[in-house]
Image (cartoon, rainbow, N blue to C red; front, side, top):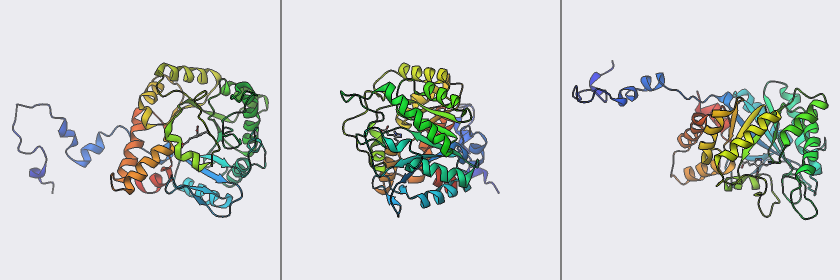
Length: 339
Ligand code: PBG
């Protein structure tokens, strides 16, 4: 029987403190009743890497537990995630060969497009299949776009490459395309190209707000990035005002974005909240590789409880206003942590 004497507020004196916030925290049942922010597997999107020309999944040293998949292991991982109720899959390709234009990106036989087709064949509409739409994995210089003769990322020439990539990804079966290169006008251009090609059915998950972040460090290993230098001429400055982020969101909404995303997540909770306050489409947040690695390595060193720290950071993103969260923990959270 509920022992009244065990209640944390039992025996505390009367009138002096009529308002006691602890009352609502005093049993697990009370805390459950007044819970506002919840995590559900269907809010979570699992990013997956698929590598060309490998027969075994390759571990990624800086992302414990994450691998570069083979075509076969990718399919198994995707099926497992869908069975666990994960809301969607975001696919990244790691090609064997790279060139200045990122030719593998819009090649129907390129690693990403082949993998998309495999997954769409196997899973149909049972999940939301998303594709990273960017050139950095496919270029030999590692930038997210093509370069002009002076070596600068050429915005409008890049849009043409993105358009071709979008059509290839749509043909391969992606439901949502995720342009992540931060080129000006990318959403409007892709929307127009898709619509003109009769692919009004394919949606755009806009990486609307994307910072030039140190937290992408492990991802660079995950995709064997060739980048030397940085992406500061196209990704946003972490020291810039939130107004810049809201401007990017306004533009993407006007250009036809179906969802808007903020990236990274935890260091930008203020931005997530500001975007959620103005966006009239669902807001996503990307908990990036470095955020994942921080908790994984801290937990491995015994500094934090892995599951609790991971869930707390996911909860923070939901609380800040993200409806959808991309996270490398999506499968484990869906299978084991959220019940
Ligand atoms: C670009 C892209 C990046 C990430 C997602 N899409 C790397 C970058 O912009 O430098 C980072 C994701 C992560 O760190 O988990 N294709």
